[in-house]
Image (cartoon, rainbow over all chains, first blue to last red; front, side, top):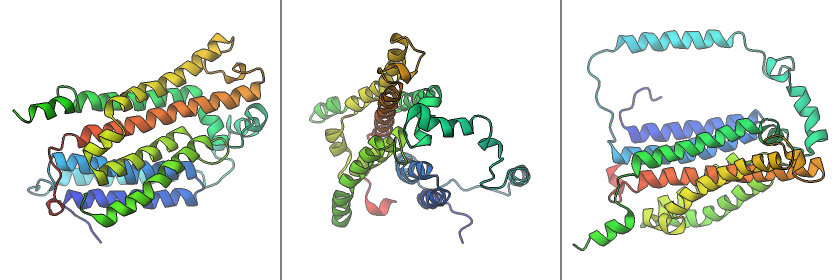
Length: 167
Length: 146
């Protein structure tokens, strides 16, 4: 068992493996859409971006001097709070859970009658909650613009750099 | 990673099915699991794998950043445009029922177009983020440097 690692390359690889395993977990929970996303984003693209960041910075975590008790206390407190929070959760698959009440039965029965496609998830995402998805697409677009502004602006373009080389 | 012949051959075998599967997830999303977001990230993952194995210059040749940057906006504009189309045809914003004469067919068309917009934006955004990170590397790292 690994508890501490200072080699960040190994840390990135382990988190990628963890993502892949949780993708398998989502499949067993019948959430195939989420499993797709987790496998492609969590295990795939995020890992590559982490590696890119490591290549730009350093591959070893800076050594920490002395014992750090405050973070330990915060972590233990947070863990206890989170576990306490799960006590009130409805049982897995409980039909009376709040998530399955309110508008949910309407979506499930309405998808066939109003939209006419078999996939309820797609119907909810694209049609019933189209505004939500529009906002999410906007968030992704904004994230891309943010990265472009941070990493690309002010950088000489590829073409110009190549023509500069012989000089 | 050009000298890793096993990696290169494996990538050659894997990338076409990955891209094909992304298109399947995109256009079959109404019937099976999946949709625009999943298709977009799978497509981007295929292209990122290509970039990893064949190098930064090659991924810039296949999918130039300036094109991907335009695609980011085009996807979002398709989504917004579908919303305004509903508005123009006498419905509410993002109301697909009015897109065609039959409300059900309108819903089909609306969901198809919206998912297409999401897929284009997600795939190109992921690709652009990857390219932004990778083009900062001045040289390829040797294997033992990791």
